[in-house]
Amino acid sequence: MTRILVPFRNLAAVLLLGVGGAVLLPWQASLHKQEIDAHFGGIPMNLSLREQVGQSGFLAALSGFRSPLAACLWIEAHTAWENTEWGRMQSLFNTVTTLQPHTLLYWDIAAWHMAWNASTAALQDTRQQSQLLRERARSQYIALGRDFLERGIRNNPDKYLLYERLGILLRDKEKDHAGAAEAFAKAASFPDAPAYIRRFAAYESALAPGREREAYDRLHALYDEGQKTWSPSMISRIRALEEKLGISQEQRMKISAPVR
Image (cartoon, rainbow, N blue to C red; front, side, top):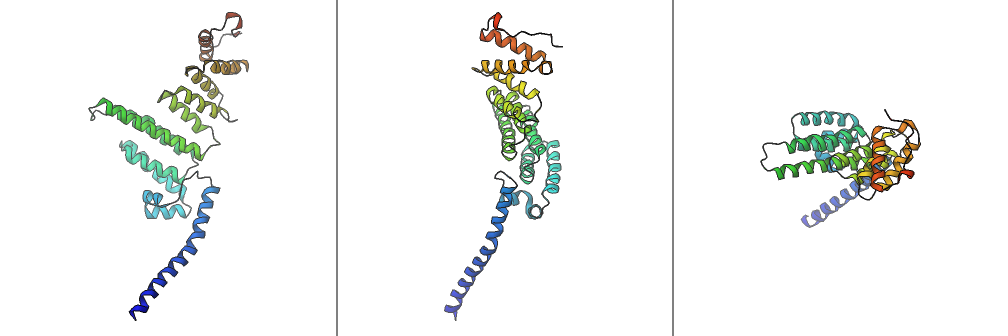
């Protein structure tokens, strides 16, 4: 009897696995297709998410309650910020952006908290006696903020906002003027982008070694569009670039009216 039951049990297990696989595989394929159709940019509804939100939260997400669940976790992240619990705040922001990858606000504020608030707090942390370690922690938080923006861009490549925010981070936090110029230029390429972003792209080009001529041409083109684009900063940068590029007085731009 035993010799018969053991193979039978093994066979039953194999059959159960086969039936289970036959049921689960189409469901998993359907879920994967929904992720692609929704343009989740590689953000999976998998065990990693389940670990972040727990069983109830994971079931809620699968049941179509992603938005309210994300909103609740967003409030928790705000509380973590108030308590300066930076690690917990980052984890919560990761979950929120996983649940709602197309809400630009979540990516934007998460990046701001990490690259500005957490990095500043790390640099000013008097409990850490080593200046080197404080600066290292600051750099790590800035990198986390940048990562939020870059992941946000991958999930929302057709919106200018996160490109602009990336340009600001590269300009103000990493002093990467060439990278900032590229990010601002990309943001400015969208038809609904504010006009000032084009100036930002030119300003950053002017600060990137070897790109002064590109910056001058950009500012020249902006100036030629008319007074609506003029500003004191633009004019001063144009004059500074003319000096740096060695442009003769005869070839310099004719500024027709003072800018107030």
